[in-house]
Length: 295
Image: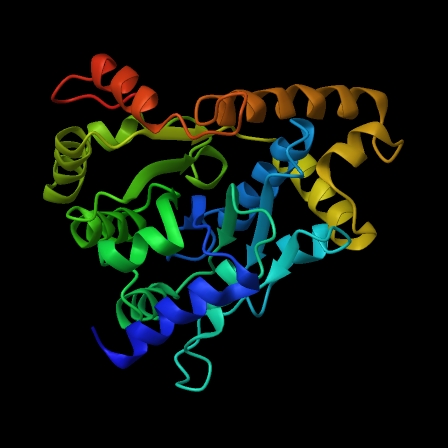
């Protein structure tokens, strides 16, 4: 074990006098910009609040430039910032994810784009990919890879699968964002493209039994208005519905959208905020054929 790894172990074990590992580490990433990572994170937080899980969560926004997740929920004590830096002086800063998580049952980290190198460097440098250290810091990491279905995003996702396929304590969920695919339809087109990348994607998802979930689409003009209200008034999605910022019909429409979001995360979590990864994996495996995805 290297000195840095020993320091990591010591820091983690002595933090706030506890060595309790994070139960469920939820990483929202995807590397490519504009796929909806922050959008998904904000809705995941909203889902947790509707479920009254505030005493179970800690959330970190790792985006140093567009910290819209932090801005939307900064009034809450469980909302925090963290940075994955390539500076040697800040290399250990992400230990805040462990050190500053008062609630370690469900810890959510929103990653910005173009951060994968720094993220991996932190995990590799401090031995967080090695079982003897990893299990002291977090039990299981669930990586929600958000994609817009574009070639570049699919390429990055396949690289992600290769990177983590031999790390059973990091489990991937593929999140397709309907509102970002430029077609306003579905992702079935991924099955019709005659190319190595699309065929390879389907094969790898099937072989590795990767769960696939889809973010429902919201009308662009309503999404713009919602984003404006959240950013300017520092309010949450649910507070918008409860208030009078929207017309009656738009409010009703958005309430229906939030029900779809509830259904999306309801596939991933049980009533106790446990991740139903195995159940979701088994259910989708039964739905699939060698040429088909559950989308």
